[in-house]
Length: 99
Image (cartoon, rainbow, N blue to C red):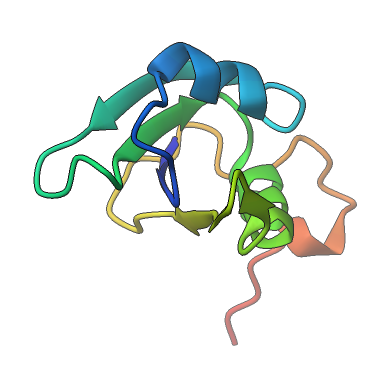
């Protein structure tokens, strides 16, 4: 899965982003977008973590100031989740109850 990371500095690089996020996510790829406003780039960060892990970690890190700018995380809904949830079916957050 992937998320969009904003609040970045103009001098950032995909390597710096990956290194900075590695304590929180299993980063597999970073694509940097400078089109539009090169002083405020955005990054598409691909990770191999579960949806729940990414959602919870992104919510913890959202709004944290890094080098003078608040980080923003956006998780697009229109992506295929190969591993939507963690492997622990006893975790109540893993259940989808319709009814």
